[in-house]
Length: 158
Image 1 (cartoon, rainbow, N blue to C red):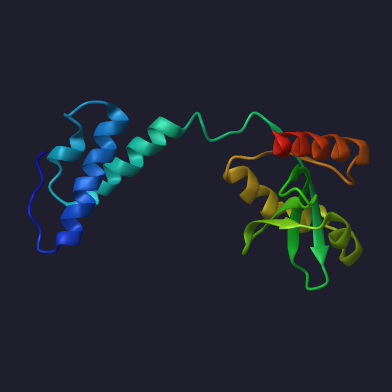
Image 2 (cartoon, rainbow, N blue to C red; image 1 turned 60 degrees about the vertical axis):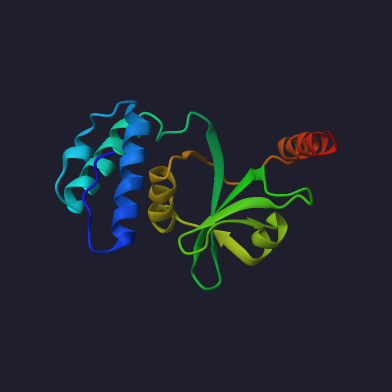
């Protein structure tokens, strides 16, 4: 592997690691990364190659049903009522700051209200940018929730 020696060993290690990433992704030893002179050009090739190889994988084909809610503080969050987080029955949630987490669905309904389209727009865009294909709903179907809960229980027992 052709790597130039730099003052700091950390830089050398990161460049060697970057060279390994690109050669594994591309499957060849003649990637442009090996011939780049500086770290900035190498990072450009890394980002470009990753974007090129993952552009078709960014969009999820599964529709995720989601509710957008606003709490007392004005924080908008998303509840995914059919994505169970644990065996207790908590559902997945998402916020700008906290990102993914689990939430008690009933408690969230009691302490929050439905978000307007304007309030939910930025969170909706953020979720789609990380790969979700969203279907916005107003309330969950309890029978569908119970079916998912039973599937989770069966998978947990096995």
